Image (cartoon, rainbow, N blue to C red; front, side):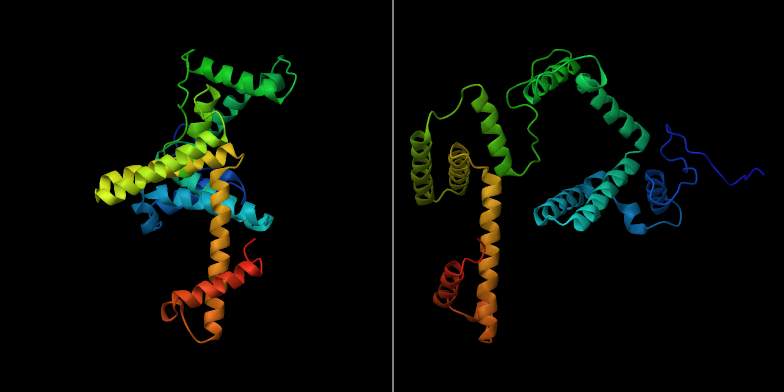
Length: 277
């Protein structure tokens, strides 16, 4: 018997109600999103815009990375779901159907893997990378890409400094050795000290940025990822400061009620115990 209240989904109309979908399917989740944004839905969700969702997208991405660092597969699955929800939320606000999104990435994968979906033969992973760049260039109509083009401007600044310099290094724009990049760091320290003495805020900020960039390149030349290296330092600091707070709590104090000398003593204790390493 025909149910006049049942509607089939239209892939070209992302606002159309989806057909009944089994719980756990992508269509079911899209339907939940449409319910949230539709009549009788959630007032908070209905107030959101693509711009207002930006910090949530970034936050969910970092929470997913934390789950990866923890090697916790249950937490990882949960965070993948939270990130997927952000994608579906943005698609709904942009009135872009998931069918269009999925078809687009699927066609791109087929196009960029002719050695899997076509007749092309590759020797190794390096040739796959070469072919990938060639296909991307063809997609741009043969227009050569600028050396630094494509490094996202919204990427965290330290990671972007690493990526930009790696790109430049590919075409030979790089310090020749470790002593030369170390000399650049020393030069930038001197320029920052001079700027600080001048008392000009804009000059201080400029030179501080140059110093941070140079230190990132020193780490890169040492074979380190500066972002990962700083993340490890952050974890050490966090763990050791937690040790300071725990020791102070035992004495009935808070950090604000303690002296720098006392906190330094507990910091050295944390280092001696290998906390954070």
